[in-house]
Length: 133
Image 1 (cartoon, rainbow, N blue to C red):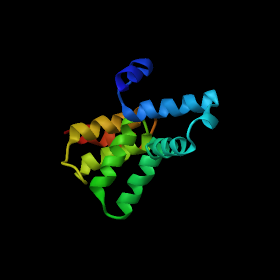
Image 2: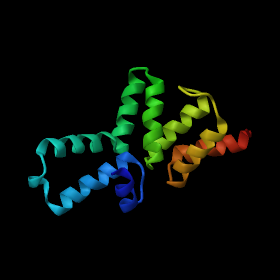
Image 3: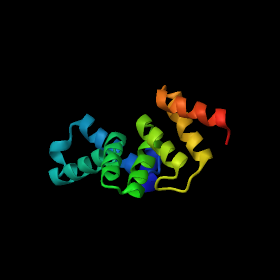
């Protein structure tokens, strides 16, 4: 089933398949004909994996001093294009918080956020280039 669906939407990512399927259900207004428990479960899953929600959960993990879990959330949100998550992930790599310190990874994520006009990432990226690797 997944290969057929993935060819239709052009993605093998299970989250993306569910998200697009849920959007199609909403667009086609067939929610009434689908089991409401299934619709609710898919809705909760999709909302739980949205970049803003992942970023929020990452911040909660930081408050609870669970840095590795925060990095996992930030990584997923950053990969989906969440600019603040990109900056936070870059900081984790830059300072070695929850991950092995890696300036190339820090530069990668600072650059992503800086290109989206995140001022703090632009500043940190400039400092890294000024001081050198």
